[in-house]
Image 1 (cartoon, helix red, strand yellow):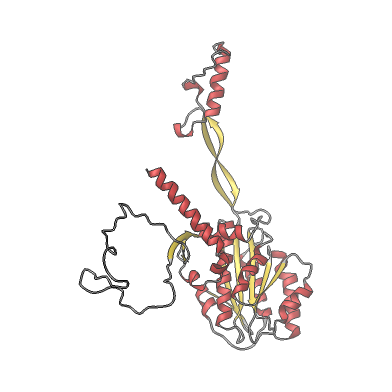
Image 2: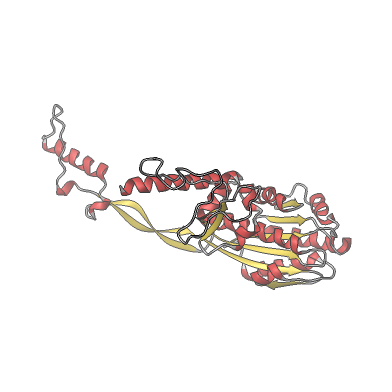
Length: 369
């Protein structure tokens, strides 16, 4: 009975995942989904999923709702009040089923649907971790680790050596000396670490809608990268005419105004990498979001020099997402595309509204760097 329940539950989970895949583009742009995130699970509302219900017993005509009575006669409840007295509407009721899915499951679905390749870590990390690997055979051990193939092989060799093997009746009965068991040895493996450095323009032209787009996209980027690395850190930089490092809460809720000097963010990012994140030990992912309105061509030239000389040589990939706003010029993306047209270290993406998040994530993560 238990096995049947487990099988049914597993099938139900597959149905849930199929529904999420079907509507993934909608969920990616759903702000409430991100807000309800816990440490390990995400709650996802599935409005169209219907769970089958079974009714037992005969469907005779003696139950509630059967018998005499005019069409539309209300049914009395146990307290004497009539049910169904509410005002009628012209739309069917909406039924929501809240399901919990782990971050790992969500990352797998995201990767499959966006066809994201698994990331190949850059170089070797000097940080090593010990892991028990079953790569040896022992004569003693728990029965749960008995190696049946090796045990049979030893019994066959003994039988042949003793002349007891009968080809007409090839029955092999292992004895205690024949038994072999899987064993393990500690093995040092590279512990690949990653850091995500988010930079966001918080000048007057970046409104709440633009920041919401950044918040949602950053959640999905985190979800995928955390599925690829054992350890990951996140740093946040905001800038207008000057840049500063902030915590996550401030990053998503800060309100600033004034002009924009993007170079200030790149300068701080480069200093942060030099001081804290050795490229030999860390896989580094800077993401910058702006509406593309920078303070003059001189600052854009400074940005290009900082990226070429200080940032690109140390990072896996640099990603720039341009969020459309009513006040931004959108020029900065054009400048980056023109300057780094054939540079594999830079990826740019234009995010016109929430519906553009889906394709933007694929732009950034689709190359598996």
